[in-house]
Length: 369
Image 1 (tube, rainbow, N blue to C red):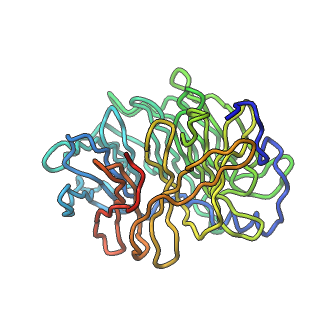
Image 2: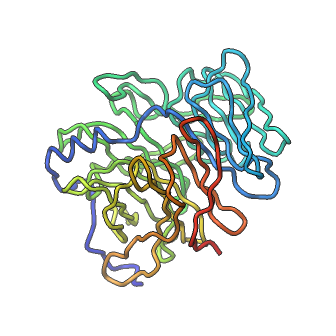
């Protein structure tokens, strides 16, 4: 593929104006800022006794799933309530509770929790952006069905939790986070709920930050992608553009949902692949297939449905590639929370159902090699 060609779908600072009803729908269906529950798949490295961990927001225990498929729980210290989980390459699993940060050792026979020290009282979401570094969305309050006055910040986790950088202020209102690599640098893609100079409608907007010397430097303040988006994630899905992509879950002019993959190109996002419209859920996950060949996952369905993985099989020149389903679970009731992990020879979905039971499902017809 010619690295210099420009695909037909592109977006920059000034995105096309979309009908007001679509913008409103996007805002109402944006990622829930405060999780009801969270599942996190544990990387398969032969050392972990847990394949997944999970929490209920405000709960008093950590749930975990063993390799044999049995579910267990570990009680938290008194007065500690769970808020968010994040995987850390240097610390294993990190649990953010009400006012405390805890390391979770999943190599132990039963996951062991160790306090790292005091942390924020209210953590809405967290991502690791570098060794021993996490970006948090904290605080905020509900107003007219949405969270306002939330803040983002960069924290060092060891030897004790310490705030290193104060991100966008309360007027920006960060909602969702994803971390990854873009053009060779650790980056954070932040969804902020605000208006723009050329668009007075309150809705989710993509802002990019680059990690430099224990601070986050602004990289791109986007007005939108090519369509209003619900959530997005940094990914590496195209072998022609290593570490250059963002996958966005978007609303079409008809109010349908579809995924679009963009290549970061200077100061613009250029569309390089797109899925067909489908009844996708509100979250995206990814698993590394081969180098520069991520599979992107989403819930597809209503009360019943399946977790599907999408990838690009063929990259045509001078036109959008098709992001298509390559693996899926069986039909199941919609889980309360879920995640995916790469097993030894397959992709596995880690499920937390409404009753609080955890389970592991294999995705069939997958392309993990």
